[in-house]
Length: 146
Image (cartoon, rainbow, N blue to C red):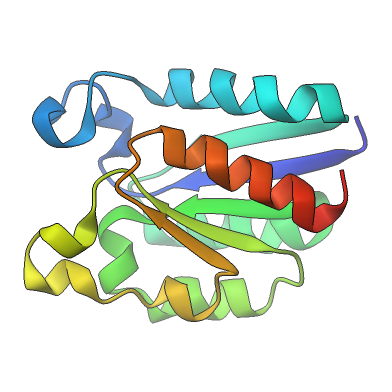
């Protein structure tokens, strides 16, 4: 496979399936990865799912994507609302970006209604559970012509 989609996840998503399942469900990042790989693989595209609780590591992965990824699916989690640095890194990336949120952030606390990342993303998906990652993967595949 010559193309790769990076699926980047921010803080606390390592607890997906365990933390607040009434909001985030019972599925894990391993489930996300396998479901997205099942969509991308038949079209000759690999997925590389990564999660970090550290903003700088996410920025480093976005920098790596400049050479290694055809597209980025990103769930910045809490960094969505705070990180100009992640926005700046995404602005330095030339490929398509889709922002994903498992919950509907617009039904939650007011501070969750603003996203720095949305200013860079080709699309934003919120409230579809982990199916949002699948939709984002399909959209990236369309955008990269795979």
